Image (cartoon, rainbow, N blue to C red):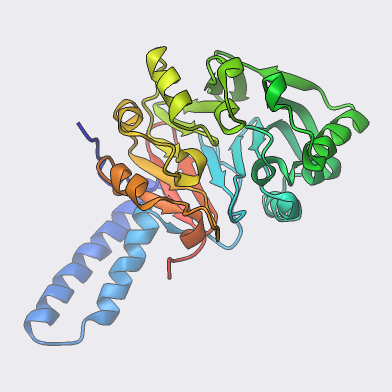
Length: 329
């Protein structure tokens, strides 16, 4: 059964602020209804109501996104065009998952700077494709990172690209601890949050770098976020066959919403309340229209970085509030 969730009030707003704006919205609603009956122009009133709706339930981010307040965890899906870069922060820890293409490292650093982050506890590379690790060497070179996580890659798939070598060189030059992450590993994100590596179950069975992607789930209180990297149908099937708990509130679409990922049985196990598609101008037909249509059977809360820019998700451990950088054209 597809799962849909009602809109949740922004958990960062004080209750009295919520009460005041709800009251104002009710008054505006009555005035708008009366104005419509009288044949008056109510567009201004409707604009005010829309603004309150965005404030209470989600909408564009402030010009300068902020670090989490006490009792919060934040997930930032950074707009790096056709690629992936995700920042996870709690009051105590921070992790960067991927850093986009080779020319996106400076953009990722600029975003970290807007948050006042000059160091990271962790960096995790899902897999060695350039649209995921291309900018990572720039980030590692520029700020302090406590530990880097890679996934295990079968020998036959070991990259020989300059992009991959550049990342390894920086790790070696700066003597950053490097660990291989495996299914079942748990990374403490502080404040009661933890990131669990779910897959790949058996990386040696991967027939492509995409299917060697690290798949992880962030759990914070009653909320959860699933990060799928570029995994495709064969690895989705392996997760299902091994009984991995995939149920979550938010998921990133595997392989940028391609036709090779996010199959029906996988969605039935995940039952996401919301999903993010990380994509930009591309020649791969990402996101695939049929994949998006399949997703719409489970949620109508689908956020795309190519349309909305950077997407920020705020959890208070009970609910998730979503903000985005710009309105879709």
